[in-house]
Amino acid sequence: EDKVVQSPLSLVVHEGDTVTLNCSYEVTNFRSLLWYKQEKKAPTFLFMLTSSGIEKKSGRLSSILDKKELFSILNITATQTGDSAVYLCAVHGSGNTGKLIFGQGTTLQVKP
Amino acid sequence: EAQVTQNPRYLITVTGKKLTVTCSQNMNHEYMSWYRQDPGLGLRQIYYSMNVEVTDKGDVPEGYKVSRKEKRNFPLILESPSPNQTSLYFCASSSYDSANRYFGPGTRLTVT
Image 1 (tube, helix red, strand yellow):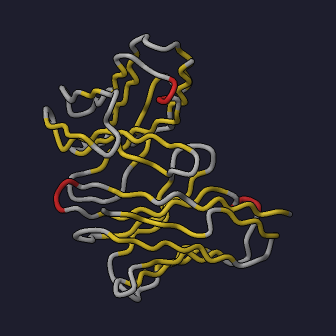
Image 2: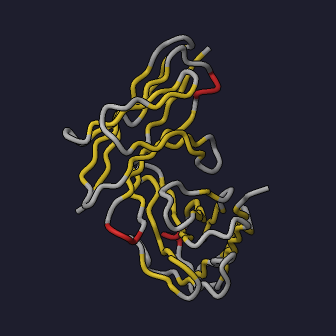
């Protein structure tokens, strides 16, 4: 059965800390891995990764994929209170049904 | 503005009273889907549609119906809601060859 597992499930840090969020997967016919940020509303897109070892970066956020070990990490440096959110990892696989399989999410709280 | 809209945003109803949650997108996307989000379980797909008149079950379809008579609309129907369908619901769309989903704002449903 296809599955995506995120860790930790929740995390509390202070402003300025660096955090690493993990996502491991077992998915048939892997096509891509996506990260979303959810702040009490709809998830918003952060990154899509398709190739191993190529870092995607946007400001203080970065992400990388390891297709051999079947995981991805999302790094956030110099965290701010505005980074507080649920971070969702999703994997696109399963042939041509276009299905996205989501992990449980990691709830990040950044304290001032 | 490219967007996915859902209505209503909040709904409290009673067991057995049929309801419909509407979803509409203005991006001419072929692919549309419905998810429910419950604490600790992430986003789980209810139904999806690859195009007009083409729909299929996701992971948790029991108790739900959908239709896709027009490309832009994908309503979710609960014929006889039960308390275990209390959840946060998201509609999402994407172009056929894209993994990234555009999410609607969410509908918080409470069934008493």
